[in-house]
Length: 354
Picture 1 (tube, one colour):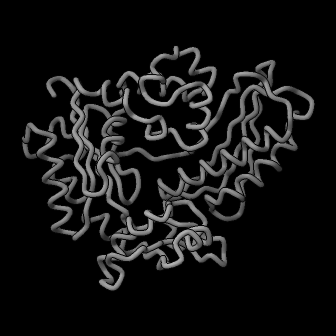
Picture 2 (cartoon, rainbow, N blue to C red; picture 1 turned 120 degrees about the horizontal axis):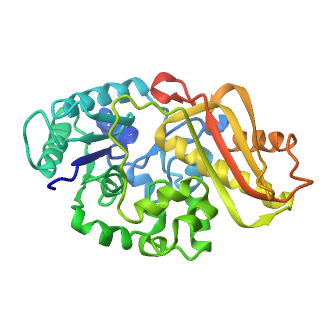
Picture 3 (cartoon, one colour; picture 1 turned 90 degrees about the horizontal axis):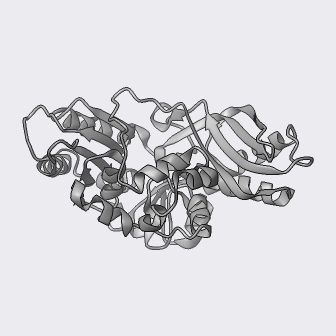
């Protein structure tokens, strides 16, 4: 890739469910749902590909998953096993480079521009890593190879399971142009819906908008969307990266004033944030809301709860309580945001959602 960086994104395939199937032969080929109890409002952590065919996905309430897939086999998480497998996988990564940025137990970025084995081809490294993961853990991984984190991340999801997708610089724009907007990393269901309201169905549509327009419509995320539509992502692979908070916000094309519109935003946003946290395997304790009025005055309100959570209903309920400390009933609103901080990884809280 010449002067370009060589980035690999490795994403394990249905990781928790695959570990369960590996360790219990009776589960192989069966629809396995890893998650919390339906009696305690548990949610799905991971579903096997057999269960996904029925529409089961992570962050979905377990009770909903079992309705969609009545023959699904519910297994409570065994985080000690997942962490052990993850440690073996990370050891393989470090044989090639120390520029490894783990995003969760089951995914990581690697910068192999300069690597310990002196291998010039990032594709060859990705292929070797996939083969070694299979040999050591008896699990499969999907890999994306490109010149930046965004494209490598999207590429790893392109041919799951057990996929390997390489996007060199000269193919990046064509790949992005044809990519459905919902497949973009950082675009969840609620953002996808808003994108489509602006006529954005794929990368080519996204690139038609100016930086100012995207900032107006999507707040601070607008610059990110502007750049990735052009194949630009300068984020470094950071081995010491620690997530401090997770949030999203939306700027309305026209100011809103109806309480039901505002509450609908927080319900939708809480669902999307919950799903994002589930994918990243994190929980949090401090819920925050952001409100920008029509006159550009901006207020934030937050509340720290007793227990770590990523439950959408809890986040929504707290957001509505925090709204009472704002002037939404007196002033028009142009931007709303929802966030969670005081974060904790699942691997540090083994009993989460059980």
